[in-house]
Structure formats: C-alpha cells, structure tokens
Amino acid sequence: MPRIVTIGAAQMGPIARSESRPQVVERLIALLRQGAATGCELVVFPEATLTAFFPHWWIEDAAELDAWFEREMPSNETAPLFNEARRLGVGFHLGYCELVEEEGRQRRFNTAILVGKDGQVIGKYRKIHLPGHAEHEPWRPFQNLEKRYFEVGNLGWPVWRAFGGVTGMMICNDRRWPEAWRVLGLQGAELVLLGYNTPRHDPTTPQHDRLAEFHNHLSMQAGAYQNGCWVVGVAKAGVEEGIEQIGGSCIIAPTGEIVAQAITAGDELVMARCDLDAANPIKRNIFNFARHRRPEHYRMIVERTGAEPPA
Amino acid sequence: MPRIVTIGAAQMGPIARSESRPQVVERLIALLRQGAATGCELVVFPEATLTAFFPHWWIEDAAELDAWFEREMPSNETAPLFNEARRLGVGFHLGYCELVEEEGRQRRFNTAILVGKDGQVIGKYRKIHLPGHAEHEPWRPFQNLEKRYFEVGNLGWPVWRAFGGVTGMMICNDRRWPEAWRVLGLQGAELVLLGYNTPRHDPTTPQHDRLAEFHNHLSMQAGAYQNGCWVVGVAKAGVEEGIEQIGGSCIIAPTGEIVAQAITAGDELVMARCDLDAANPIKRNIFNFARHRRPEHYRMIVERTGAEPPA
Image 1 (cartoon, chains in turn green, brown):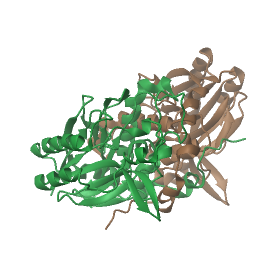
Image 2 (cartoon, rainbow over the protein chains, first blue to last red):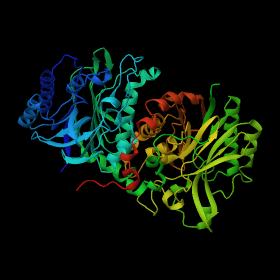
Image 3 (tube, rainbow over the protein chains, first blue to last red):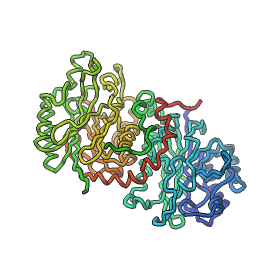
Image 4 (cartoon, rainbow over the protein chains, first blue to last red):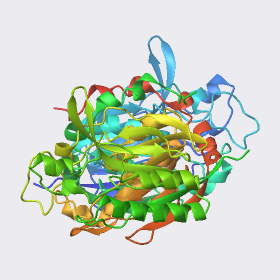
C-alpha cells in the first residue's frame, strides 16, 4: 500500500503586536479548512505561531514577558483550533512559546507540538539551537533575544510514528545544523516538520542579507537529501512590526527537491502529496547509514563544542 | 593584510585504461602551468588522478590490482609534477591510490596529498567514506568496488596551516556526509580540497541520475556554508571507458555560493581569488560553534551507526 500523506505548509503573514490570540486562531482555522478542502491530512504552522515574534524586543517586565507565553495547550483561546482539527479530521503542527512549571521553577521554551487528526497532542519538541543573544544590544535595529527568553530544549529530538511514517520536528535555527538532522535521521525520520521566523536582515552580517532565502533552502534541502526525509518548512513571513521576514515556505522531497513553495509573504497554503516511500532508495543506498557511516571518526562532534584551529 | 589565495580547480577529462602515468602527468603539468600563468598559488587535481578509475572493474589478479596503486609518492613517474611545482612555485592537491606497508602488511587506501610550493608533501588524507560494495555484482553495468579495493582511511580528517589558512581535505563520497565537514569545521578549516569520480548513473537509484550534479553541488554548498569554509571540488569528468562521469568542478565560497565552475567534461582549469577572511562573519556569528552548538544533544551521532526507527 503506498504511503502517501497529503500535507499542507501553512505560511502565516505578519502578526501585529496588537493582534489577539483569538484573531490569530481564526487565521489558523481558515488555513486548516483550506487544507481539509484540498485533502490534507496534516497542516504545518510556523514557529511561535500565536503572536508577533516578541524576541525582537527588549522586555524587562516579567509580567509583560510572560504574556507572550502559553501556560497550557490547548488553552481556552487555542481550543477552537484543536476542535476544528478534530471536526475536520486534519492533524497539525503548531509552534508556540511555552511557560511551564518544571523542576520546581518556571521555565520558558520555544516549543512545537504535533497534533493528531483526533485533536490530541502526539508529541512535543523544544528548540535546542537558540540563536541570537542574551543581553540588550541597543546598536541593533531590532533584538534577537532568544538566548534570553528561552532555555535550551530538554527533550532531544524525539520521533513518533504518526501520519503513516516516522515523524520528527525541529524549529527555525535548528534547520541550519546538520547535527539536528542527523539525530532525526538516525531514528529513521521520514518526515521532518519545522517552522521559522527569519528576518531578512541579520545585523551581524548585513552583507549576507541577500542570501537569506538561499541559506534557508540550502540547509533544508541538504538535510532532506542527506537523511532521506520529507521536510515541511513553514515561515512566518512578511513585514511584522517593521521587521521584514523571509517567506519561502516549502515542502522538500527526500531527493532534496522543492516540490511546493509559497509565493507570497502572507497567509498562504501550499501542499504536496508526499510519498513516504520515496525516501527508501536513498536510505537503502547512498545514505545507508549502517553500511557507510564511520562514527569512530566522528568523535570530535561530541567531544568539542567550539572550533579549535591548530596552533 | 588580506588573506587572498588564488586557487585553480583542475578538472581532468577521462583517462583511458591504456593511458600511462607519464601521459597523465603531462596533462597535470599542462594544467599546473595554466594555473601558474594565471597567478594560482595552489592547483587542485581530482581523486585517483593518475589512472582510469579501476574500482569500476572486477579485478581478481593481485598483481593486476596492485598495478593501479602507487608505492611511493613522488615516484619516478610522478616526480616531474613535483619538480614543475617547485620550479613554478605552485602548490597542488593530488588524489591517488596508495599501496603501503603498514602494521606488517600491505594496505591499500584512496589517498590525497597536499604539496607545498616547494614541492614537499605537507599532509596526507585517506578516504573514510568508501562508497559502493565489496563483492562482485554482475547485474551492474559497471562495478563500484571501493569497499573491496580500499581500507577505510586511518588518519581522521587532519588540517594543516598552509596556503595562508587552515586547510583540510576530503575525498569524493566524503562530501555527502555532514560529519566529515563538521570534523574539519571544528578544527577551524578555512579551505577544504576534494576530488571526485562520480558516475552519472547509479545502478542502485537510476531514478536519481538526473540529480547527480544537483546532489554534488548541494552537498558541497551546504558543507561550505555550515562550516564557513572555502571549498574546491574537482571532478574527473567525461566518458571514461564507457562510463559517463559528472563534471561540475567548482570553487565555493563560505557563503555557499559557487564562484567558479567548469563548463566542459574535459581537462579544464577554473580559478578564483579566495579571500580566506570571507569566512569570518559566518564563523563568528550564525555558525559560531562555541556559542550555539549543543553536543550534549548530539551523542546519537557517535553512539549509533545505522538508523534505528522506533518500534
């Protein structure tokens, strides 16, 4: 029996600072319905989907910061999305900012969940590769304070048998790191879901702004090919509170080919019929890990964090 | 002082089975001279440069097999290349098949050396990711017997301070493996040299033959970007003894951009002025390993060889 999963990449346009969660949830439901109407079993929403991307701002007041986080999922405000998913029989992936009581203290993570067609949470991932900085850097036109507002994820990169195959998640900056892809690949991941909020302008390397889309796709295409998995990469796009974010949401085959791609900077659903078995020729041959990998030569990857050039 | 190194990627056209080493060395010297005439300090030749690529054939006779290997480097037959390099003051990278007495026995490796402007060997690398198979598989139109004819390299991926920066090597199939790139990146590699012999047709996945060049460039561009290094990837191209090999020899910047690329399937030199400092913005920001890597979450990369999907 062919393992075809029809998947929608539900790109979001900008979310205003003033926009409420119920307003955003309405937009998500509209995209979910587009997905259902076109046969999608799974709709993938971006990173930190429910609000404007607040790590761009320096926030000193704890209550003000906490207001950007979700204390429960679903909550009263997000329950309509879960209910609609159940009603339509469409699963979804949702990124959000998670405030949780763990180990006797409040912890904040940049989180994504996978939700089944029954509206139940299948699994959770917490972002590991937090980009940016932890201190206020007023020289920047906007901040990138993920290292301040979030802890490093503590769940590793788990996978689940879901939507007909082995499914994993990563978030935004993770996609640039081959280690994240490989940990998923070593668990046989066939489908990797990820959302991103990526400004076109990186104040540390403005000379590379023109390459933002290229680097986005290059990282995801290499990850797909080198691990033999489908990738659904979904942006929050467009100019959000004055900050232009790249779009380019796409679905990538295990060959590394982009098979569907958004063409706007707004709310836009693109989809693909993904044959999970299309990964098999790659997993069994060129990237047959058991036959070809040589971990005895890879030890530096875990024994060293930073680069250490020779004397 | 800017760290500009002018480098030539010296693609080779096919080498006939009947072609002798002195004939090949003449071709190499012609390319080396083209490099010298256009200001190159370093000319990069492909993998297994000195002969036709014999792992495509089943060879039972030990003496016949050994005749494809080099017992010393330089040898009488290759000394003219080293002498010309010294005379011109141009370094080079050369891939060859190495037969060596080590640990009390004869060993065979797929090897590359880096040679300085003085004609002296700076360093050696032995290929780790051997593709293909170890037994005769007559169903294939041609064999890919690297796993039979070579041992897995035993030198790791070393780097050297050479040609103004930190220089490392990999060989052919290594370029598809992000682990190889990362081990070089973790040693601060600024320049990665690699040769390849890649048939267009892979009998295990003929449906992907149309993607051979795409996968070649995708792997090298991702490796360059994700580690912030220059890459010089050089093919043995063209139809060699009936087997079509991809060309696409190129020089890639640390941004992942291809800055020079061969357009023929024959002997062809393309070059670039490579500013080694162009890697710094990437190494210090987006791929600042010390700031962003999380090896505690990468352990599966060394603890597991093959993929193990969940139950």
